[in-house]
Amino acid sequence: MSNPDLEDDLRGTLDRAAASVPQATGLSDRATTGVQQARRRTWMVSGVAAAAVAAVAIAGFALTGGNTPEQPPVAAPGMPQSSNPTTAAVQPLSAKTIAGTWRATQITGTKSLKSARPDDPILVFKADGTWSGSDGCNPLQGTFTIGQRGEFAAKSGPQHMIGCENVPHTGVLQSAKRIEVTADTLTFAAADGHELARYARAR
Amino acid sequence: MEFEEYVSARGQELVRLGFTVSGDYQRAEDLAQTALMQAFRSWRKVRKADDPHHYVRRILVNEYLSMTRRRSFTEAPTAEIDPQSTVPDPATGIVDSDDLWHALQELSARERVVLVLRYYQDLDDRTIAELLGIKPSSVRSTASRGLATLRQTRQSNRVDERLS
Image (cartoon, rainbow over all chains, first blue to last red; front, side, top):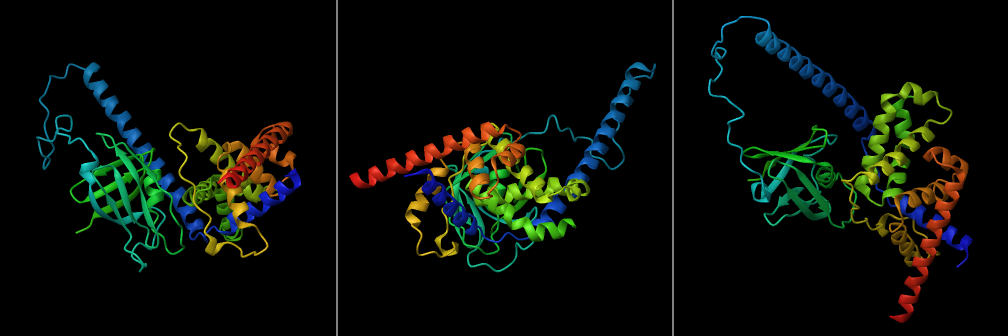
């Protein structure tokens, strides 16, 4: 096959592939909301950093500045005296921890989680490290791993992409690098720590 | 041009470009969104550019190439082209085209990007070089390597078909 033939075929293939892409919605909103959230995060991080600097300064003053007699720590009124995060028992996470069925309650950039869809947009994790579910229109599946301290990685299997108001479970799972689990809430976070999505255990 | 006007006019093109380079719908949307977020951050500067779309397109392809270089990046299985939503064209050998699509996914990320920019975006080699920050001669050699691999993959697929 000559190069011109191959080049023509390649043009056709790429045009058809591009034409098969479902219409994306809310790109503008997601881009502007993402930037605004990032700006808020930056501000919050700056605030935390300032507080940390102040705490170090105060600690430094206490250590070097003076002959202040050593005082036992006193809890602020209303604060529990026994709250010590370093001694709190941390439950190691595993695939078993999140095994079960979950429903998205909040996904960054997705507004219409409650819209009616052909299928129930659930996400099911199994203790054997596989996940499955539906985005509302297409069956989904893949595998995942969880580190003891919440490190998370997932892969998705091949899937069809019938257009509807697809719940972007796959996007969440592929972007997530950490999870947090409380009793009935599963939170996914990106590598930089920002929250991607929140799921509730289905009853 | 306001940001919202740009997105409404060209946003879908970015998703399509993301799909042709990555072969993955979810990643395509992520790439478009990342490019748009970065463009939105400096929209005053972007809108003054001769061609704002060129600027955003550059962000998208370079973001994709950076993504593929990250250690955490693993190639996800490629999505199939949904025949229901492709442009109907009875004269086209769809099987051949699908073969080519699958063969494209076997190329390196840079080879795929160069071929997509050349044959889907119809950019000349100098513009592609400027967009990727490489020399035009590198664009030519990368494209040539990519085409050679595609041709070889296609030929071996046809031999396999004849033998089976």
